[in-house]
Length: 188
Image (cartoon, rainbow, N blue to C red; front, side):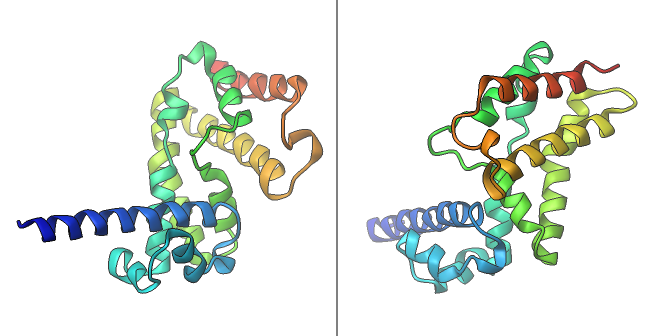
């Protein structure tokens, strides 16, 4: 490969990544139907036609954007005895540069196509690994309970904001969240 081809390949990879990051940011702040490719590509500094070239469609861009931010390791990578505290800390901190997938999941519910994508990815990337990590006969129910608490918390933190969940979360809310999550893990 010559130098010009190598530069074009690197530029294409950077452009594709910029579109993906912009899509994650946009899809995590508004419903799929309100998120425009024009807005996403403008934020990425790219031509809207490149979405079709790199991803195939807006729906495929959404699928890859969500898939990239779903990380079950954030839940299953902590010791069981510290699960509630670790996950509550994760949920109540604002990690720089990390896109929270839960608003994307909540916003996806408004569109049948993205809802199906979100449910499939959530099952594959989060629920199944969490079930395996929890183990036991009721692992599926317990994983679903964790997801219900997480989705509810983030719905009222980011999508339909309630004062106790906004901004800097109080120690009382954080303790409630940690205990609620830990009770699910400790149940046997």
